[in-house]
Length: 90
Ligand SMILES: [Zn+2]
Ligand SMILES: [Zn+2]
Image (cartoon, rainbow, N blue to C red; front, side, top):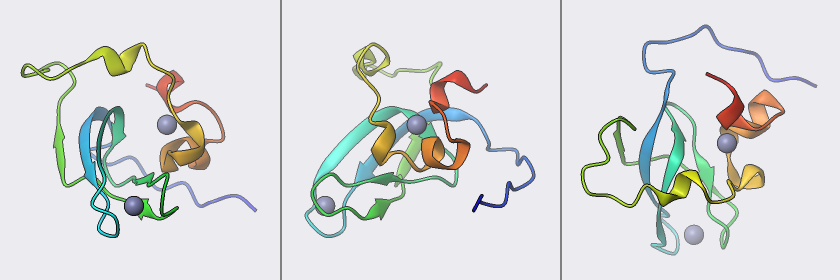
């Protein structure tokens, strides 16, 4: 079973996203955030969509060390849809 690949939208770009789980209120940030894609809360195992997204080019004082950290592929909806590491896609 493969998910239906949607046609590319304008916002189909990697960006910096801020997430907040509505269940446990856990907050996290990711430099591997995609428009219309969520990431899973590691505690609740629910898909959470970013409430805030900004371009990667403008770190805005935020910690961008996320780039060097391991990306939690199992939690990333984009990785699951692609079937491979989402950072490898453009
Ligand atoms: Zn949670
Ligand atoms: Zn990913």
